[in-house]
Image 1 (tube, rainbow, N blue to C red):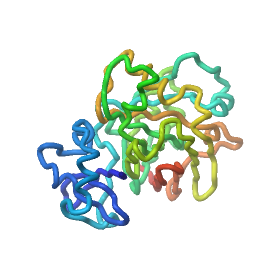
Image 2: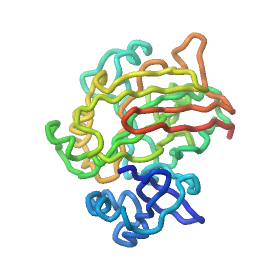
Image 3: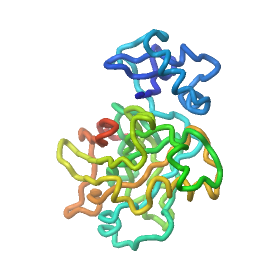
Length: 282
C-alpha cells in the first residue's frame, strides 16, 4: 500500500492511495487509530488492505493537501556520512559506528510544499535520502531481525543550512531550520519492498541530476542502523530513520550550488516515487 497523511477541508486525516484517489482510513478507524502513527502502532495494514475495495470515502489525491508522511514522529534520527562518495567529498574518514544527529518534527514539510530558505543564510543545500519508518518498536533489536521492525519507506530531503551546520562540531542548528526537512510523498509499506532490495536514489535540482546512488553502497546498512539505534533508546512505531545522502551535495561542488527561491528539487527513489518541492524565501 501507499499511505499518506493529509488535510482536507481543514481536518487532518490519513489514507491509502489507490490510483489517483485516496481512501480515507481516518474515517474507517476513527478513535481506534486517529492518525497514521497510531495506524502503524496498531499493525492495521492487513485489515486495511482487506477493506480497501469498499472502505470509507474516497477523495481525489489532487484535491487534498498532503502532510509530512508522519507529521509528528516521536523521534527522527538522521544518519550522516553513510555513502563512500559523500564521505570522500567531505574529507572525512569512514566511521566504525553510524554518525547520528536528530531532527525535530517542527522542521518537516510535505511533498508539494516549499522548502524555506531562512533569513539567516543563503547556504541552503539539498540532501536526497531514503526514510525508514519503524513499525514494530523494540530495544536491542538484532540486525537479523531488523527488517521485521520496518513499517515502510519514503523519500526525504534533509535540506541543510550549511554555515549554521558548521558553526560548531554539533550539526543540530543547520539541520533543523523551519520547513527544511521534506518528507513524502507517501509511505510504501514494507511488504512492497523486499528486505535488501537494491533501491536507486536520485536527486535533481531544476531537472539536473546532482546525486545518484544505490542502497547497497551504504556504509552502515539499514539493519545495522536499526540495531545500533535500538541499543541506546527503545524504537517506537512511527519513528523515522533518515538513512544518509550520497555524494554530490551543493556545498562540495565547484562552484558551490545552493538552492534559491524558484528552484524545484526532486528526490526520486525507484521503489517509492518522487518527492517534489519548490523553494521560497522566508
